[in-house]
Length: 86
Image (cartoon, rainbow, N blue to C red):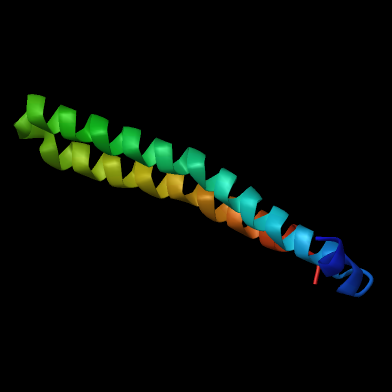
């Protein structure tokens, strides 16, 4: 391990750790929206199974919920890309 560290140029290690940190940060930011989408879809399916006559309205509301939840993942992606210095 020390041999690898001795061969790196100054600043290479820091840049690599920043990239790994940004990737881990985005991965953690995507966990919440993933869970949220699962909950939204699961509850929509349960609602459609209980009252099939309101399936159209439930489906529309489900897609709106998915869109808003997915926006959180995109915001997390943009924030971590902006924080990653070039």
